[in-house]
Image 1 (cartoon, rainbow, N blue to C red):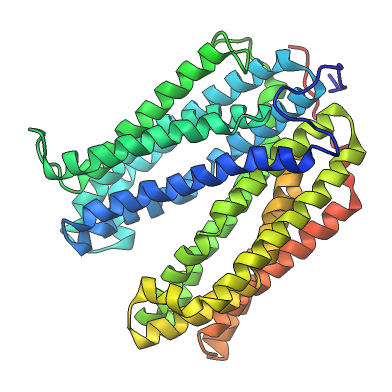
Image 2: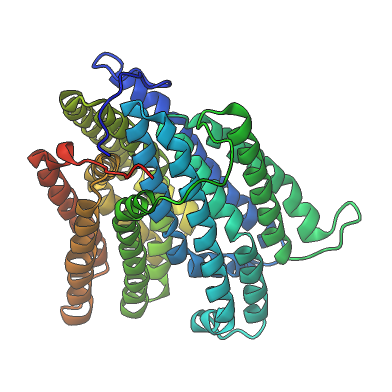
Length: 463
């Protein structure tokens, strides 16, 4: 079944040359706020756990690091879901949207169960790979078990949010996340310290607070799903359609592998910094990642806006408007990040000082990290927007190849040779990161200019 436009206008977006900037902002700002709220989730946990002792902060960090690679698999579902539903919404084929969502939802739950069971079977040896502290190991393992228990809630909520993103509703997931953050903020001190007659759970209280908050988010999203009828879902049981499932994974898996490639190289880069330059440089590397990570609050909004907007425009059949939207998204991405990048370069010292204090060696390395990587930030944002364009078109192989080449064939070899062979200063690592950003942007930009993504179709069978 080819997705030709049926003459039904998308409900939430204008999809005209005049409305493009308005559509982009309407999609982007709730995602930006949601990304900020996600950061708050982790910061709140870290704040309350740190009251128990600085060393215990490593428990949630360790559990989170172990799950990060597996959580990138959610992109295999979310990106495929957003792309397909956006395409169907733009084409006016709304009767297909409930089927896509239900297949996505059950796929998400099945994947969550498989990951939870698999990781739980090897939880202890996994934790022991990262630490030999006999005090931390049992706490980290128990924290991991609780987190795995709530994985089905995270994956389910991701599927619902992705479907809402696809039709252009980015505000509802943001509001639900705000409610969940509020509950987590209240529950953390109660469960960690045992307030209001609740037994004190220590660091594990943070895990239970997060699980309960995620549970609330899942329940609220399900209520919204069935009551609002924006997606047209009346049941979580529909006839199985293999072509829908294949398309979700075909679109989503390359994007997921791109995320996995980036996160896995981060672990190797940390080892290079630690082994080649010592603890001060490693501290600067970690702080620099957190500082630069703040920018992804803005980038994520533009990326999701690109995915939804391009998907709906291509669904409507207007390739000229799709190309115009892509140009405006790229210009917006570069403009926003040039401003933020210059700000980082100018404020590198005070920003680094906030994270590293007055440790001279760590501070010097941190300042150079922020300044050097800040130079590549304009292209970094544009790369994320370009990735969003390809995802919206359902053509995600370019994002995987660009991510693989830039991370595994540029960043890692450049950093390894500079560190292990030439013994260059730690700035070598920062330049390797910046070089990978530039290479990834060049690959994606050239690929986007060719325009093959404009002709990508999503075919589904009638049953």
